[in-house]
Picture (cartoon, rainbow, N blue to C red):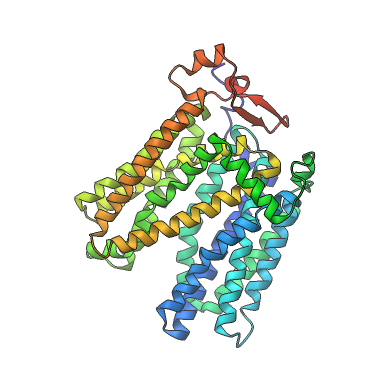
Length: 445
């Protein structure tokens, strides 16, 4: 059939699901609150100490503790009910941020509280990402993931801007209070907007004899890296570290163009805007198998277009290049959806934690290398080199994915009719595994 229920899914159907609306609202509150607190504390610490190093230490809270939390706390959302994990994380973060408001809290204690708050976030993020697969399935999952990713990108930009404006107008303490309030509201929305579900590991018949933190992490690593398709999909996700090079050196890039902080902010926001505008269109107008076919080429283009920076374009053209790169980066929706489809439910949260940890580490290393390279060569050349390297990697990953997935091969239709396809997709609605060819008619691109 050329048309199918999965193909006719709309954003309206997704937002009609009450539980999805609760997850979506918690995403907005979480991201905006995090950005608000991070900007407020960074500015507060710099104002009190006039130390760029301590301000950088505070800003690093967005990366360093997150990795540790992603590795060791994400599995909680598999061993415990996901709704309860999200509520508990929100309450803990609300208390930690509120503690920063206590008068005369020492500076090192404030930074420690910020790090603790950030370390809890991965458990919440993994629980929410895993719960999304419980709430919506099939093509509606792709639409839901697109809505969440678009919201995330917009909220990152809006939250950072709101943080600076809020601190300037009413002070850092008020901004921290607002952040604590966002966590409290999010906890209420999740608690009463989602229905209770049992822990995911109980759906499995003792997948692993031990459910301890290290055992769960070890099993998650084996599940993700032991499967060639999951490994390839996760590497496609980590490719973001290379096409996000411009974000790490936006300030020197803007300075080379004769711009200041405003120009740097526009450069950072341009890729987010390009993705936010493209993602809903890609998911609502392009079918799932077509998205899988385009995934490799789009990943290549997201990186390759950055090589145009070697021509040292002006600000307007640079904004267009970065926005176009962000538009091609929407292939991540297809990678995310395929990643979830292959994961067993009882390992979903831990797998998301590993993916997030790897991405954060990759971004940190990429930004560090970009900054070091920009000391000796023009920032535009650094962006072009990062894009060229990413294009080479994307080409290899795209070819690997093409060989892994018969559904996107050149003769896919005949192949799927004549052969049993070994790759499996999880039918979330039915709760069983089915071959690709069994769902092809209702997931046609």
